[in-house]
Length: 508
Image 1 (spheres, rainbow, N blue to C red):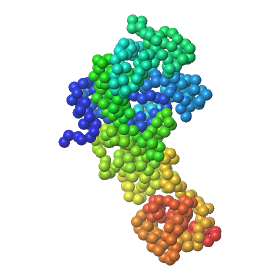
Image 2: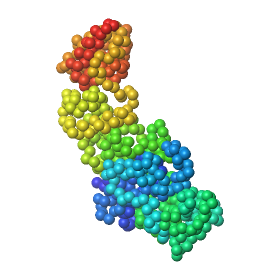
Image 3: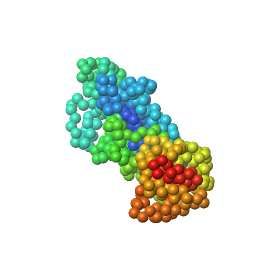
């Protein structure tokens, strides 16, 4: 039966165009590159994988727009240091931490490392190299020569008026290094040079190569033509009526004589409690951060399971747990096997234990692999592999540290907690009777029944008050996981000893 998975359908449409597939994506590394950005790359990657199953002439590149100017001093930058650099290309600006070659590389390097973990096999292109090397020069000249037609297209599509001096090329001033606000005053096709004037008072002539860059609405179609791009995903902002894609379609045809790429527009990823992600606003969750708390396959699957046009509301807290389980457990409802097949990345090893359960077991075992394995095997998970368990426990512990809500956190106390001094007489008697009634032959549900039976014998005392004493004795706080199941995890003998000790502690 033919697959109904969205990437298979898109690949079929691409093949019907009769063009050799060349996929391209890109982002401006002006701030931390987040999982909203990675949706573009993974959308392209999954289509690339499907096309690669069908043919062997598929190409995929990623353009780092490091020749874009620094637009403003973002909140995460030092104002005194970066205010004078606003308007300069990102590749020409100092690294914020001093450990990378330039500003762009500071944000690009960890993102590329994350793509490696996600097994995204992509050819990197840096826009700065494309311009400085002269590769873009013929396309700049065509844009300058076709300036009037470009203005006509932009006006027709956007309704915007353009001044007589408007140019599709933004020169870089040799004196102050800025391209923001500079004015093109002339160009030579034969010498491949431009003349410019800058608000700083400087003016001069310089080669086109390394002398500036095309404005975005012209740069994008120019690179389509230069690379031969035939497929490209892009954010919904570019796909609106009169947006960058609409104007690019006409510009690439009329100026460069090339057919526009097959479009794959995608929706934003919205961060729970924070709205749409934005590097410049600092509302981000980096790819590297998420890959600390979930395996690469889970992040891939979460992003590529649904069609690109569907919004993803991303909750790194409790919401992420179901994604781990959906990848781990073949019986999970709504699991998409085709999406999972295309999400294989780094040798994911299922453990067959719900992630939430594993987080509790990990804490109960002090995140010791042997102890956790023993607890799991004692409580019904007989086939757990310790190697896979060790890896997953690491993710569980890092998730808990980074995103776990307070109600999920606990630590089994090695000694009787001092908080037992605040227990009242009913709570102490309740713990004493539990210590008598519980036996190591009981398991989770049986333990739970015994706890309720004992609590039912305390007329006029709210059961919740009695249950609190269980957690106080074990954890030193009034709440914790489901009581019967939790006692089963810790082991009845340990809990019986602790309940007995708490029932006769000083103050009883």
